[in-house]
Image (tube, rainbow, N blue to C red):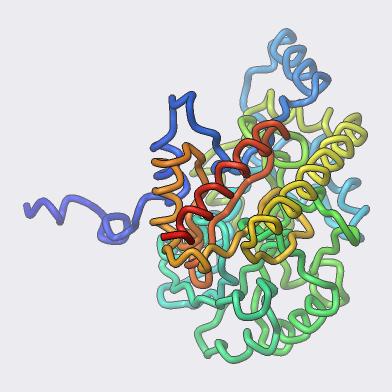
Length: 388
């Protein structure tokens, strides 16, 4: 057997995660300031950890229902009313192994070979590979031309008879852009007219710094074609707990649950008990973290303005997507040279897809003292590059 025939052709063609590639460069390096990995710098609130301890103490170490604990699904359904979303916890809500599993399950449940999914890019690195693994074709919508907001008018130009879905993320990773309600309304009208799914990743919904988060699933007539993805990683500082969820029509959920049964069985039970505590008791903790990110965002905005590099001011998440084209460097060169010369890690924008080249993602979920030092080093680096 040819060596190449031993492996999946789709997987063999797939590049490794660009984020992880840079993370691997710095792992174990105490001398580098990392603005790379998108992870809260807070420890999970104590009461959540305590709830998980008690769950273990009581011997709760078994599988749960494939759907997840009913108590957790009921709490999530109550929480979602905050965003005017209404889902039946018994048939329209599934607990997953993080949002990453949710993305995979949804795509494999709706796609047939050759189906197209329009993806608003720059975007999180897993969307396109998971579309291809599901047999679909990712059609890139470059949002750099529209200030990182996907516009209905531009989406319409990419529609074909094979278009099955549109994938959006708001607040966005890596740009921090938040889609305005007016544009979501136009996109919703287009989706209804074309009879396509709208997959909406809303894992950063709690981290907004202007108008409250608005979900496209709350618009009239959208519930039957909206697939809402969310989780506990970012808002509750629970990245390691791997708890996410899917909200979608019951008819689609009957397909999704079959995959989940074979794929993961259920999310970890102690994490599910922790998630219940998060929703019941940790709203104040979430708000404290949001305010802290806002202070750090404001510092980053001011510091990068002084350096003289352009950027679109972020309204959510905890990223600043900085335009480094004035330096004359590519995204990759900028990120690599910055590590080598100034020991600061950022992620090159090209790993996030179309429109990302010429930018770098800076995660500001780090101590303010580290951010100050990192920005001083970046300022020196940019000054030296411009001086030639």
